[in-house]
Length: 111
Ligand code: HEC
Image 1 (tube, rainbow, N blue to C red):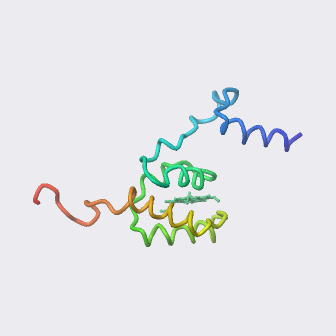
Image 2: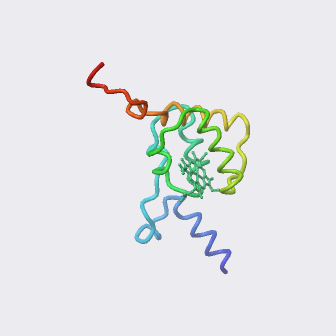
Image 3: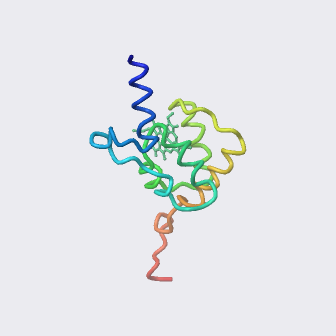
C-alpha cells in the first residue's frame, strides 16, 4: 500500500495531476528555464531533488558547473550523467547561468 501511495505521489505531479494540486507546490515546467539546447535535459536531470530556483540563482562558469556535477553525484547521490548528456547540460548551464557581468566587478554605467 505504501508503495502504491508513493508511486501515486510521484506520478501525479508528473502527469500534471489535479488531485494533489491543492497541497503540492505549483509543479515547475521545463519552460521555467531559458529556451535553448539542453533545456529539457537539464530540467529533468536536475529537478528530481530540488526546484530550478537553486539553479536559476547560480552563476558559475563551465568549469564550476562541471565540478558541481561531480559534487552532486558524490555528495548528493545524483545518478552520474552519460558523458554526452553531461556535456550538453553543462554547456547549457554555463551558457545561461554563467558568471554575471556584475560579479566580475564591471560597472555597466562606465563602459
Ligand atoms: C540526487 C539529488 C540531486 C540531483 C539529481 C541534483 N541535485 Fe543539485 N543539489 C542537491 C542537494 C541535496 C543540494 C544541496 C541543497 C542544500 O544545500 O540545501 C543541491 C544543491 C545544488 C546547487 C547549489 C550549490 C551551492 O551550494 O551553491 C546547485 C546550483 C545545484 N544543486 C544544481 C543542480 C543541477 C544543475 C542539477 C542537474 C544536473 C542538480 N543540481 C541535480 C541534490 C541534487
